Image 1: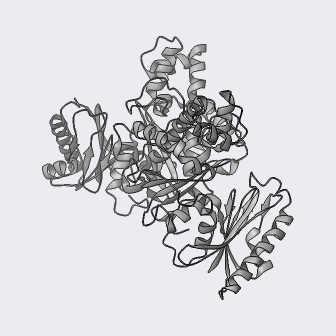
Image 2: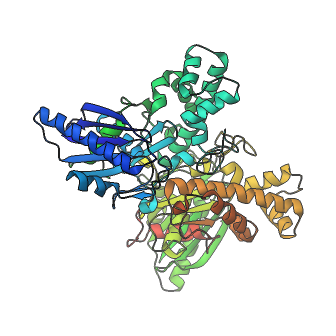
Amino acid sequence: MVIGVDLGATNIHAGLVDEEGRISGEVVRGYDCTSKHDVIEVLLDVLSSLKDKARSVKKSVKKIGLVCPGPVDIDNGLLINATNLPGWGVVPIRDMISDATGMDVHLDNDAVGAVLAEAWVGKARGLNTFMAVTLGTGVGTGVVLDGKVFRGGRRKGTEWGHLIMSNKGLYRCACGNDGCIETMCSATALVRLAQKKGLNVLSAKDVCKAAADKDIIALEVMDEFSYNLARALYNYSLVLGPEIIVICGGLSASHELFLPGVRKYFTGLFSGKEYMMPPMGIEMSRFPDNAGIIGAAYLCMEDRRIGL
Amino acid sequence: MVIGVDLGATNIHAGLVDEEGRISGEVVRGYDCTSKHDVIEVLLDVLSSLKDKARSVKKSVKKIGLVCPGPVDIDNGLLINATNLPGWGVVPIRDMISDATGMDVHLDNDAVGAVLAEAWVGKARGLNTFMAVTLGTGVGTGVVLDGKVFRGGRRKGTEWGHLIMSNKGLYRCACGNDGCIETMCSATALVRLAQKKGLNVLSAKDVCKAAADKDIIALEVMDEFSYNLARALYNYSLVLGPEIIVICGGLSASHELFLPGVRKYFTGLFSGKEYMMPPMGIEMSRFPDNAGIIGAAYLCMEDRRIGL
């Protein structure tokens, strides 16, 4: 049994994970991300309560898997200038937690965590080349290529979410550019698109609710969003040649509102080069809420099939 | 010594290539690509004259490297439905030539040929992850990832030239879609852009000549073309993380008209994520005209450093 931790920008999400990828004792704890020292304190408290839980079922835990938003240097255990953790700079988070707990800590990026969860107990089990696309505040993309996590040339990471796909996006992205995939396919983009079309909404949930209630403008918004997402996934497919694309993240709870449209537009884009379509298509993750915990736990497993 | 052959859509370009990647006895022969049997005849004639040339310098040749436009199945030696060789269908070209000549034939795609030429004796020597982008009628892209030609998941090939980058391109691409990179960054796109802006031009050479003569509209066209190409190469860099991008193909002869602009826009796009820029930047190929011959010859070399 190991502990899997998904350190998000507003919550720490953690649990005990067994050798079959099953979670128990799940904990969600909010925190103020402006102070990295507070986070470490909250995190240590969470870890301690999970160790107690393990003890209560006569199990011991010696390993922690941790996934974080933003670039990580896994070889040196560093979290590097995460956009959504402003002011943190470069944090030697692996050693900080390892020193404080005496436990082995395995660190990776949260998009990697999502794709590892799919590889281990999700929709990509047994496959070699695939991706997990997380639709939330941003667009995260974890990639496995020939049975190994793909980290880009020089292991500098990849930025699939910031590919430029349009002359002009809905808003200027935090990445500095206009028209990147994140500005057209994230939950943030969905809200902006709805506001631009005159809907009085504040969150992606509001937009999804209006669409579920068959508001005509909200349905139009969903259609345009589906079209944008189809184009993004088409671009990914042309370059990677994945066997499946798994969608996860906060928006996947509302997948029935956009997935049929995405699949329709996606198929249309491949006309004449059908052989390049992912043979297993676009699927929803089975664990939109806790892929991070499962993927983090997988980092600790010694008999991993998917290499890091 | 081996024979390298670049089978283009209008010309066969071939030569003898020695162990150092030097070409001799280069031959360019036009042909009518509408009949694949004529092509084989012309090709056999070219091969026979190159064998004679080799004999005249007391060398023997036993291997042929062949690169072709369009998808190839290298494992089975097939050229598959090449867009620019209409009506050819699936051609077992490796065995056809091998049977007719009694020589070993090594087949690959022409974009792979270009990147192998750079790997062997060009700007990418000694590097591990890089790409060669060929700007001609279309946009061809050969990729080496961690010292091995990258053929996409399931070895189905990749289509970097058809990534969608704009809401609306200059024309509808043969790929069926609007706004893909090929419709914005190829020589064809350069001509369309110039015509759209009112220039009376028929070829990329005409546009380049007008720009070299400081025609104001032609300079504007070159600037917009540079901007488009910078965005395409930025997209490629985000996903691949290359150490260098080498530009080749017909347009590279006029690189002084667009390369400074491309480099300027390219750098601007990486603001805030400079660590993702290719450390060796964007460079012009040393052999815009005969990279295909060199790369084809490299296919035959047994001590290749770059894997296929």
